[in-house]
Length: 264
Length: 93
Image (cartoon, rainbow over all chains, first blue to last red; front, side):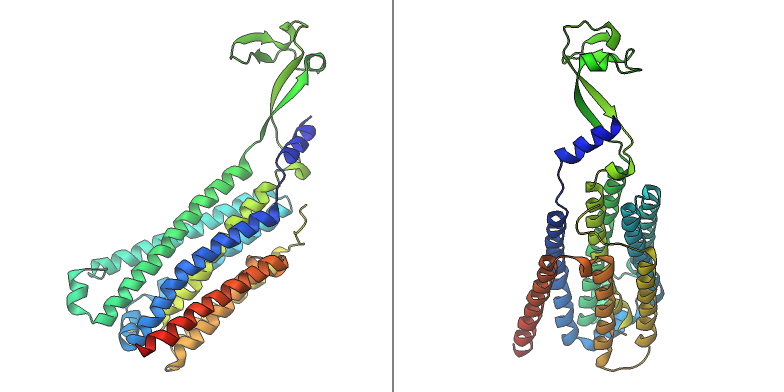
C-alpha cells in the first residue's frame, strides 16, 4: 500500500527540475550583481588609495582568513557529496554531510566573530573615533568596505545555514498522505478493524469494525517510509539549489580573501 | 532518476576540492612575492580559476543545459560591461 501511496504523491506534485534550477540561477545572478557592485567600489577605491589599502590589508589576520577559506571550500565539498549521496539514495550519508556543512559554516562564523571583535576592540570599525582620528582616508575606506563586504557575506553564510536546516527537515520528513478507500475494502484489510474512525467534524465514530454498512468511503491517513525509488524527487532539487546558493557564497569568499587579506 | 542527472562520483569532487586547497595555498604563498602592480592581477587570476572550478564542478554547470550555460555567460558579459563602463568613466573625472 505504501508503494501505491508514494506513486500518488509523485503524480500529484510533478517536479520541474530544470525550471527550479533556472529560478535559482536567476536569483544567484542578483546576488552576483549585489556583490559585484561592491567589488567594483573596491576596485575604484583601491585605484585611488593603493598604498593605504596595502597598509590596512596588512593588519588583517591572513591565518584566520586562510582557515576560513579552507572551511568554506570543505563545506562546499560536503554539500556536493550530500547531493551525490542523495542521488545514490544514501539518505543517511546525505544527512551527515549536510550536518558537516552546517558545522563548517558555524566554524566560519566563530572565526569571523573573533576576528571582528579583535578589530572592534582595537577601535577599528566604521565610524569609530579612533579609526577616524588615527588612520588615513584610504584606510578608513578600506575598513568600511571590509566590514560591509565581509558582513554581507557573513549574513549570507547565516542564511545558508537556515536553508540547510530546511533541507534537512524536508529530507527527514515522513510523508503523510490522505487517500480515499471504499469501506467494503478497508474492513477486509487485515489489522484495520481496531483503527479509530473520526467524522469530518472530528467526532469519534468508534473503530473500523463498528461502522455500519451505510458508510461508503473512508479517508485514510498514511505515514510512510518511502522505498528507495519512490522518495520525493523534489528533495533532490531542494538540496541541489541550496548547494548552488552555498557554492556562490564560497565563490564570493574566494575573491574576498585575496582582496582583503593577501594584497599587502 | 531525473532527466538531467549525470552519473556522479565522490572521488571527482574530492579531487576538485584538493585542487582548490592547493590553489589556496598557492595564493597565500604567492602573496609574499613582490609582483608590484601585478599582485592584484595574479591574485584575481587564481581566484577566477578557483571560482571556475567551483562553478563548473560543484555547481554542475558543465552538466547543465545550454539555456543555463548561456544565462551564466550573459551574466558575465553584463558584469564585464559594468566594469568597463566604470573604468572608462571614473579615471577621467
